[in-house]
Amino acid sequence: MADVDYSDEVSQLNKKCFTDRLPDGGFYRFKESGDRLWVIADRLKVVKILTEKERRKILDDANYDEVESVKPYVRRLTKC
Image 1 (cartoon, rainbow, N blue to C red):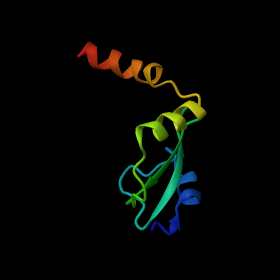
Image 2: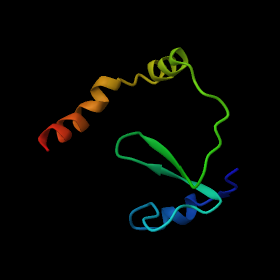
Image 3: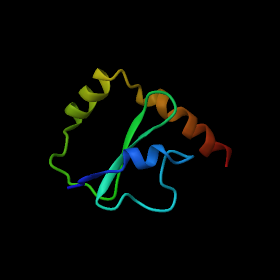
Image 4: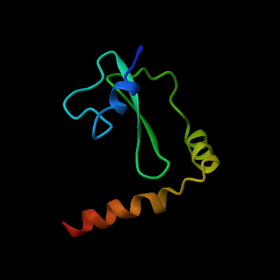
């Protein structure tokens, strides 16, 4: 279990994230452009594997459009 919250330490950094290491024994929250919030940790424990139906419900509830979200990445990859 990640016990140490590094969020305060990371918030003082210029880039608002560790660039040279993982948060040892802990985690921090990283806000990406827009409203995306990531939890960065040095390890994780899977407690449940979602079914496809559960996965889709979570994305639908969040109004997340997978097709639209992947388009910028597809455009970048097709330019290579």
